[in-house]
Length: 127
Image (tube, rainbow, N blue to C red; front, side):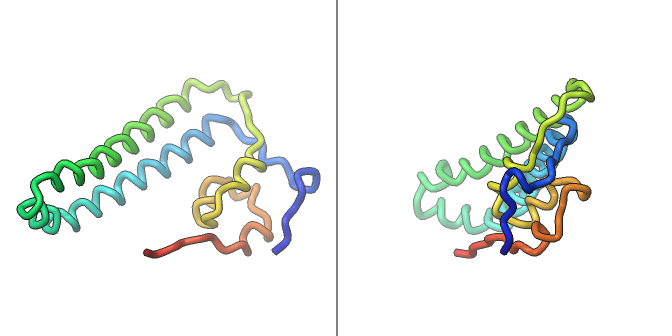
């Protein structure tokens, strides 16, 4: 794997509004995935809560997480239109900390994806 130094990397300068929109979309997608997981596990949750009444309260935290993700998504998406077009950020360094390659690819625009970033596989651990 080739790793470019900060000096060698091409700047990934983009309007802040676009960055916020992409991050907001990712959060919205996560909230949707979590909502689908809740639908899958709800029969198990009901069964487990009949054995342990406190379990239902604990599992409600999952619903709260989904609600927070949705709110953060909407917040970031709502901020975008208020950003002036000339407000830009260089995302190159910040995007280096994203270790999941598909997520990193979606956060970057196509014009900032290099062959090196395409070849790096991301981490995905199943438990």
